[in-house]
Length: 365
Ligand SMILES: [Zn+2]
Image 1: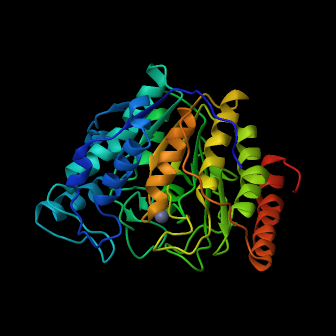
Image 2: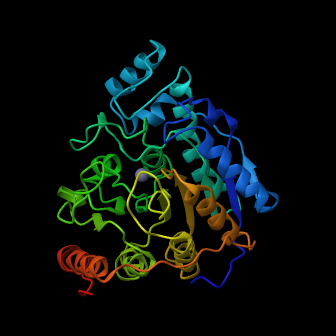
């Protein structure tokens, strides 16, 4: 349980332009998601504590640092020609191409804010999400783009490496789904460490993200997957953070920590099968604060990914409230069943044995 609060300064990037990616009201990734987030932030009075920045559009060159030109043109053509679906999952509307540029640009804006101004943390409340979008579309054999158009967090990471000249960026992806796009983009790149916790790909979209996917070439060891069994609860997730995520980040010492912030591993999410409560998202916020205090990393940027139930708005609220010293929304901690716990501990020790020990010199846990 997180007891201590912090006083780190935080900015939010949000803009009504994100509502113009006008998917149907019954589509899980719908405009109402962000309306709910902003309402809960307002009700909790945290909006009065933070500066809300307007969205900024990415240039095509920013996007081309990650995606093939052919893919970008395909997305633009499909949308301007009036298509409503790029694939069975991924719905678009006539302004979606523009909105996707704003989503990517806002992730870059978050980088600029923490680098140039006195913010420790920035939270980008954008849509469409991005982590399933690979270099040329659906990544690593995934059947669809999974609601994503451009990979916002990857575009931010590339900006930090190419434009700012940083050499150690980490992306911690806590969305319930594996970020197959992000993995593909940085698979041979050690300047961007990718760590993902997600529901086991044998039981969830996109069917990727196994322990033995460790990276290639210069990037070997810099891709760390922690595929968790369905119904993983807070107790197990805390062990993953302590035994794997925090250990690797302490060793890597990222100049900037990006978080692919998905809230669909919450127990009440309608499209997944995990059992996390809001406490796990607070654990992540607390870890970010600790890493900053220990000088492991200086700045953190949360880039919104998924989250389709009440855990989205409440989870975002609690992270913002945590960093602004405001009251949290409380929820009882969850416990894994013995069977789930045993399976999860086996995954942790396999990650330690097969990745942390050989590539990071960290003793097995
Ligand atoms: Zn997701």
